[in-house]
Amino acid sequence: MFVLGNFIETCILFSKHVPEFAENFQKTINYTSHSIQEQFISLCANSIRDTIIHEIGDGVFGVMCDEARCYKEEQMALCVRYTKDLNVHKGFLGFVDCSVKQDAEALSQHIYDYFKAYNLSNKVQIIGQSYDGAIVMAGKFNGVQAKIQNKYPCAVYTHCMAHRINLVVVDMCKFVKETRCIFNTLESIYNNFSYPTENQQLIVIQKKLGLKFKTIGRIIDTRWNCRYKNCDAVLNCYQAIIHVLQEENDDDNDKDVNEALGILNNLQKASFIVNLFVIRPVLSIIIS
Image (cartoon, rainbow, N blue to C red; front, side, top):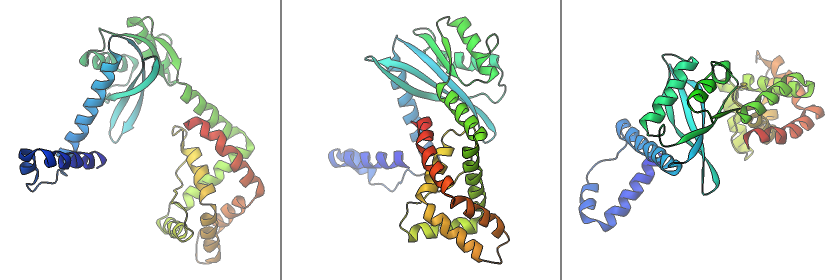
């Protein structure tokens, strides 16, 4: 809708200076149908992609991609890293549907086909590639990186540094006792407030206390910033969370009162609060 709003504002500006356009613009139409909005988004995406390809020009670039499942479709996000006026730029080119097959041969062919479709395969040279550490991507002999390097010998493979950092953080959170206690408690908070009643109570208390609305999400290893967001949310809404948990403990009819009492005891421990303040800036590194 942000794109749609900009479009309408642009139309209003044009109508002030172009009488013929103003006559058509004043007709009853709101441009809010799904098909129109999808066309706007598609036009914006094509414009951004063409700008990135134009900036690459006849130069060199590195390729970055990763797979993700979206509803019932497997998609590969394709990005490039290149230089312009000696400044490094990163750009998202688009999604590639790879639902049929996800082996190294099929994925590398998708990359070739995409580059060929947008005239990136002949006039430029790939000098780098970066993926996660999955064997289908990083395999030395039969992975995507090996197949890309067979065609582009200068395409040096680098294990995605953000992925490496995330692996270190995940291991630290699981094997260090203090951080394991923190994230076990945060997971319990998520489970407790995943019920509509408790979540609604938290929202009401946040409003009464004048706090910015924050939600507690599920902690998932592949979502790199979820740990930081949860730490930040608990610290910012600590007073509201404590208030709701105390109300749950006072309600003898609440079947989950024992769980709420356990969470409350953990949250009020000095060691938990200190460790939470220590771990939050550490985790901020992964999203910077």
